[in-house]
Length: 288
Picture 1 (cartoon, rainbow, N blue to C red):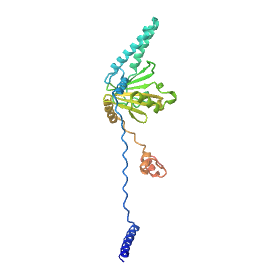
Picture 2 (tube, helix red, strand yellow):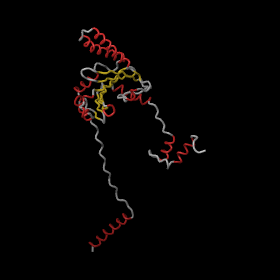
Picture 3 (cartoon, one colour):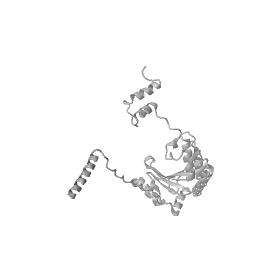
Picture 4 (cartoon, helix red, strand yellow):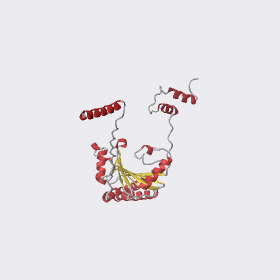
């Protein structure tokens, strides 16, 4: 009898709980599994050996140089290059022509200097279009480097008249013609300068004195480049550019009314015809 009564009591308790659940009592919620935090990107520091190799891209220039100091530096290098050609010939006429060509090259470099003062030009849609902004005290000088079998192009960027960055468009022949892609470029650059911070189209190496970016411009300009810059001036310029950036253009009133009424970025003009009519009437349009 005791066993039977115990069984009946247990059955009644189970039946009661089943009844409660049937009435809609919620089962205890399962504890949500904690999502694993994304792995933090580990960027290896630049070794002393690779830092020395990266610094070679500064050539004989120093951050803080004025435009005139950069041109004087370039003129000296040009004099040395052309002097070898002049000495290599005894033809007086040819010597005179070489001297004129040398002067013309220096003059061309000087003429290439320009300030980004708000007037849009060809450089605003070019391989260096991301490297400057207007009305922020920035300026630029450029020179072709056709020596030692290389066909590079060096752009000098100044802020408040002082050199802070150089953009070197590299001879694309450093990449095999049938393998001109980011993976190949990344391999060439990391082999030369060591591992860096790899992103979609660039690799960055950071040191206290300078940052270097290897830029993949193959899809847009069929080119690759290295950028070496003073990180302190770069950070200052980021803030200045943001402060002086032109205000974003407002959305067309009709489109804005339709988007606001529908609450999506894919407005249905038929569903929001009332909003469109209201804007048109407010602007003096509509049926007479």
